[in-house]
Amino acid sequence: EPEVTQTPSHQVTQMGQEVILRCVPISNHLYFYWYRQILGQKVEFLVSFYNNEISEKSEIFDDQFSVERPDGSNFTLKIRSTKLEDSAMYFCASSEERGYGYTFGSGTRLTVV
Amino acid sequence: QKEVEQNSGPLSVPEGAIASLNCTYSDRGSQSFFWYRQYSGKSPELIMFIYSNGDKEDGRFTAQLNKASQYVSLLIRDSQPSDSATYLCAVPLTGTASKLTFGTGTRLQVTL
Image (cartoon, rainbow over all chains, first blue to last red; front, side, top):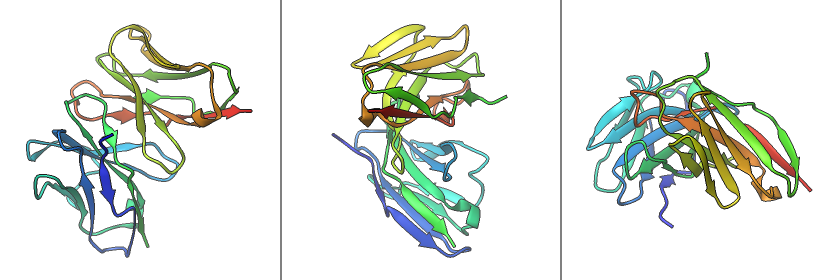
């Protein structure tokens, strides 16, 4: 069964450092998303991406965040200057159609120290 | 008012029983509703979606939607210990077709 692949599975970084989280969506999917889940809290939307541009973003997705699809397969989330409160599980997801149920990747656990 | 609300549980049911999980939402314009299962430390996994009022069955799972009352529920028949997980209700709110708003989830424990 096709799956969304995320790397790394766990990233530890120092406060103020930049991190890039990587995702390979399912190949025929057109819509891509990043969500995060702080430990013990609910899954929160960050950003959606379609046709090489951001289609929606949340209040969380401020200037320190950016997304990119540098080639035909990868989809990345960059956090420019990490804060302690950025520590969370970050999930990439993709879907074939807008508004359809997503397939989530296995996540990257980001720990900012 | 919370946009998507679920009882956090835990909901404890014996093996073989029916588990009933409920979700209410605040946006009357919402058109589609999703149930995800999340095992501890894992990513959400889509198990059901429903668009129309009434029931939708898929194996041991039945989703029920009542738009007038703004609730959606998930029934799990013949509950198994492997069903023990957190069940997340997710709704795309009006005007946000690509963004899912999740509830906090209900933790289900199926006991032997």
